[in-house]
Every structure is written in C-alpha cells, then in structure tokens.
Amino acid sequence: MKEPLAFKLRPTRLDDVLGQQHLTGEGMLLRNCVDQKRLFSMIFYGPPGCGKTTLAVALASELHLPYRMFNAVTGNKKDLVTLFEEAKMFPGLIIIIDEIHRLNKDKQDLLLPHIESGLITVIGATTSNPYFAINPAIRSRCHLLEVKPLTKEDIITAINNAITSKDGYDNTISIEEDAVKLIANNSNGDLRYAYNILEICAIGCQNSTITLDLVRKYSPLVNMSMDHDDDGHYDAVSALQKSIRGSDVNAALYYLARLIMANDMDSIERRLTVIAYEDIGLANPAAAARMVTAIEAAKKVGFPEGMIPLGVAVIDLALSPKSRSGVDAIHKAYEVASTTPADVPVYLRLTPVGLADDEKYDYGARDKWHLIQYLPDQLKNEQFYKPNTNSSYEKALAENYEKLKKYYRTNKLKNLK
Image (cartoon, rainbow, N blue to C red; front, side):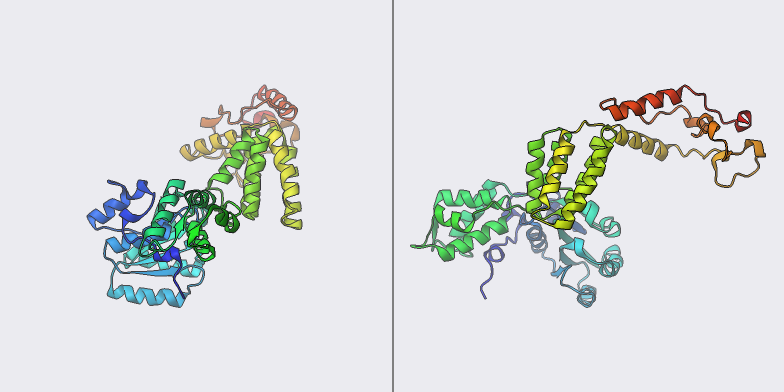
C-alpha cells in the first residue's frame, strides 16, 4: 500500500514547516527549544491540516529525541503502559498524542503522574478549543500553543513542491497554475485536504497534466475545516456572535450556514444560548425562550431540516433590540466578589447565632422585605446593575428599580418590627 502524499512529504525540520512563523521563526518558542535543546509538554491546537502533528514530529527530529505516536481514540491503557515502560529506558520519551481532547479519564489519570515527574514529554494535538475540551489537570501541565491555518500562498508553495520533490511526483506530472490556485482556495488552509485533491487529480489526469477542469471535477466545494468538536474558539463561531451582536442578519445567517455544513449542532446550541443572554439579554427575554424552542426543534428533526428553526432563531436574535446590562452586572459583581471577601450579614445566614428574635429575618413580614439591607456593610452602596432602556421590557424593570432605590434599607431589623 502506497503511503499518502501528506505522509511522504511531512517535514522533519522546523525550517521546512510551512507557516507558523510565530512558533518557528527566529527567536520564537519552538526555535528556542531546538537551539537550547530543551523541551516541555505542550498542546498544539488549531484547525485540521494546519501542521500540528508535523510540528511535533519536526521538533522531536531536530532535537534527536525518541518519540512514539499515540492516538487518543484508538489507543488503549495497555498501549500507554507499554510506552511508560519504554520511557524508563529513555527518560523524557516524547509521546505525540493525536486527538488529545478525546482522552478518557482513565487514560488521563495514567498520564498525569508521568508528565509531572518528567518521565515522558507529551506533545498533544487537537482541533478543539483546549480551554473547553482538555481536562484542566492535563492542561495545567502543558503549554498551549496555537497553530494557525495555512495561507493560500503556503498551500501553493506546498503543491508546487509536491510536483517537483523526489518524495512527491518528481516532475512526472505537471499542473496548470489556475489549477494550483483553485486547490489552494478550496483547501481553506488545510494542507492535508490539498494533498488529497492533488493525489486524486494525479490519478485521474490525462497526458500527465492536472488541469483546472479536472480540479473542478474532484474538488467542487470549498473545504470547511470545522467539525463537530469545535467548541467556540474558531472563527465561524466567533463571527456568528459578532454578527448577531452587530445586528447584521445576513452575515449571521452565513456563519450559521457554515456551522450547519460542519454538522456542528453542539457549537450552534452553545453559542446561540450565550448570545441570547449575553447580547440580547433583558432587552428581549422572550427571544431566549424562542431560541431554546428552536434548538429543541432542530435537534428533533435533525439536519438538513433543522436549519429552518435555527435560521428563524438567528434572524430573531440578530434583529432584536440588544442589552448587555445583565452580563455587565454579573461581571461587575463577580469582580467585586473575587476581591472583597465580605461576610454575609448575620441576620441573613441560614442559622443565625446570638440574635434576639426581633433582630432575625422575619419570613412572614413580606411588607418589610424591600426595606432590609442585603449587601454587607462595606458594599451596601454598590450598584452592579445599570439598566439599558433600549426596550419596553427593560424600561419597565428600570422604572421599578428606581422606585426601589428610593427606600432606605437598614441592617437594624428590630426597627422594622
């Protein structure tokens, strides 16, 4: 069985790795690792085909360190134990873990003490956002490094190299310039995808020439380098929220369509839920309820029909009035809570001690509840919520808020009896 083109052309030196100058350029982290002959556990994250595993292999090769490959999906605990035994003979053995976000808890528990002791050096690769997808215990022991999508120019360079390289086609075939550009465009930064199209075209070409029409035949659609496991870190998810926040309904529908093409219901559900409460918020609370209903309907019918309720929800959110007063309020409260460890007033505690009956919270005095001071003394004048009167609903909340602020709140509960 012939090796895939992407495997045959995988670089073994950092100088040959395309793109990623923020990691491999002069004075950058991975270059310094090679120059100083030092290595640490790390996780490369980025979209498919951008060179995560390639970087790991090139780094190990340049440092002349032994490495082994481990796939988090297909590898088992016995395979890991075998690697640990090998590492005892070669301390610092590099284990390159593909799909590291898929490691189950048992495998993670096996890895942790050996990463901690330095018996092994882990270089993980993941297409998911490591801040969501990677176990915090693993994440805290590894440096997180972003690997960026390759540019069209990078892909064009790689294709031309594949045509001329002895490890590639060694000039046995040729390719039209426009065909190279189309592959580069359709690959969307995914070099593996570009190599796969090149291989198919090399088999299907006549007269040893890959033409533009041939590429159109075998690559009719642009590669969407997203999958079900992308959880909010990558561009389409980010652009969806920004488009809805900016009330650009057409852009929002476009980015929703891209996520639907990737069959990524998880990211859609998570992001729309956040948007409904973060960006729409109190300006239109009913939109959040409608969005939840739309998600449930989409999951019930599945794709492709599921795009219909999702599209309706996105239009609703994009064109709705916006208010960030809710998210601003909880962020400010969280900031104060994290820096001011104030004690809960005694009369609000679950089991207050040392208070007379007339100093305790009265569960039956409904007409007095709005006169009680609930914040600790040092925070009693804090106002976390600042209304946004962008909608009739929040305007009503703001009016009630202003009425309540006119009452004097006290911590002397016996004065309310």
